[in-house]
Structures are given as C-alpha cells and as structure tokens.
Amino acid sequence: MSFSIENYFSDQPKDNIILFYKGNVDSDVINHVLDSVEEKMVAVNDNPKLRKKVYNVLVESLQNLFHHVDKVPDDFEEQVEKYGLLVVRKVGDGYKIVTGNFVQQENMEKLEEKIKRINRSSHEEIKELYKFILNHQRISAKGGGGLGLVDIARKTGNKLDYAFVQYNDSYSFFYLDILVTEEKEN
Amino acid sequence: MEPIIIEGTPKTPTVKFDSAAGIFEIKGRSIPENSVEFYKPLVDWLESYKETPLAKTTVNIRLEYFNTSSSKCILDVFKKLEAIHKAKNEVEVNWYYEEDDEDMLEAGEDYESIIRVPFKMIEITD
Image (cartoon, rainbow over all chains, first blue to last red; front, side, top):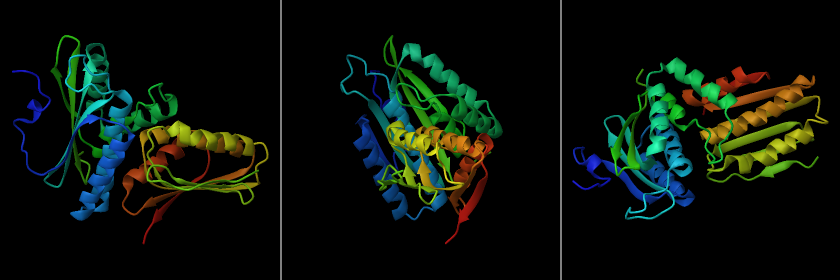
C-alpha cells in the first residue's frame, strides 16, 4: 500500500467531521480555522467551558505545527513550507482533534520521549512540569515555547494518543490524536 | 512617560499602561504566533517605568485566551513588576477569570506561585 496521509483515518468514523484541512499552515490558515471552528461550536450551542478548552487546544496544536514542522520530503506531492493536517470531529460529549505532520527520523526520538514523559505523569506532575518549563526555558529560535504539548495534556486531562507512520528511510508522518471533553478525565 | 495604548485584535490583547495613574491593563485574547514581537515593547516600557515608578501600581489582567508562547512573555511582564515591588513600591495584580474557567484560574495561580507580588484572583460573573 502506498503512503497516503488519509490511511490513518480509514477505519475511523467519517461522520461529524466539522473541519478537515491539509496543506500549508500559515498565520492566515490558523485564523481561518479558529474562526470557523468557534463559529460552529457557538452554532450548536456548546457550553463556554468546552468551547474554551477546544479553542485553546486548537491554538496550541496549530501553532505547534506552525513552529515545529520539519520540511516536507523532496518527493512529496505538495511542496509547501509548513505542511500540516488537521481534522476536528465531534464525538460524544466532546471533540477529537487530530493533527499530522512530517517528522525527520532524527527528530522522532526526542518527540516521542517528550510525549511518553507527559503520558506517564500524573495531573499534578504535568502542572509542575508546565510551571518548570514556563519559568526555566526560553522561547526557541523557531518561536515555540516548548509548552504546547504539556498544555494540551494539562487542559484536556487526557493522555496524548499518537502514531508515527513511516514515509521513507528519513521521514515519518506523525499523528497526534487529542480528545477534548468538558471535564478532565482524571 | 508616554502611556502605552494598543487596540486589541482577534489575536492580540488591548493594552493600556497608564503611567500617570499607575494602572496597567491587558485584556482580551493573546494568541499571536510571534508573541515576543508583541510583548517586547511592553517589557521594555516597564524597564523604563521601573526607574521612577509610582508608589502604587495596579495591574489588571483580564484575558479570555492566551497561548503558551504568550505565557512566557506574560511571565517576563510579571518579572519586571516583581522588580518594582522588590524595590519597595506597592504592586498589586488583579487576575480576572470568567466564571467556571478553572484553566484561567489555574494559570493565574501558576504565576502567583512563581512571582513574588501580591495577586488577587477575581471571578467575573454576569
């Protein structure tokens, strides 16, 4: 089977998708996505607490893409600077936000280590980790603060679901699967 | 000192730093991709204010959303205020959060635990 970024979704429900985007993630795209999802949440009368959580998680996911994506492989069909994928789907009493982006092999380990560290931490530990990074780490040359994933885990109270799908010897496609519900799970 | 007055946009907050009254306000949404660009002038301004501050400075933070990149810049703002406070001037931070917004309350508590300046947590009810 040849690589397709949509394969990941082939066995997942297609209903209730409120937003699907793939392509360059620039500032205008981020604005547009945020406006559009916010409007839809207001239209279906989601309560403000859930709306705020979803909005916050969307901001962090999109800006993670904006600040951190690796350049696309040379043979990839869409040669843009910051290629990313975003799917927002309504599920039960919350929303599922999936992002996808290319990661170079040498950056994979560090990313996975970061996620694993977050996932084995309790809510209290995540809170402390957030404060530690806030107080000790400077904003990187790429413009990120290193807090995005920690913030997502903290606000949702959920583990970060993720997958690396190999694209070729030097690249994988990274999927991050986030569930946002009104109340924290733990 | 000239005050700072910046109108808010969908991604950046309204800012009013009134040096004559000693009342500083940041209000709205703070979710720019490049938060340093937005906050650096504010931090620089506070650095100058620090030289001749009023006896009392009141800071009102009333944010609806802020991203993690802003959170570091907001900490830099607070660090300047901490220095003013340390130099024996009165500084008070009023941290507003909307009813039920535990995340925003917790964010305020994070700063309160890092910065040695009195914080007041104020719930907005309508």
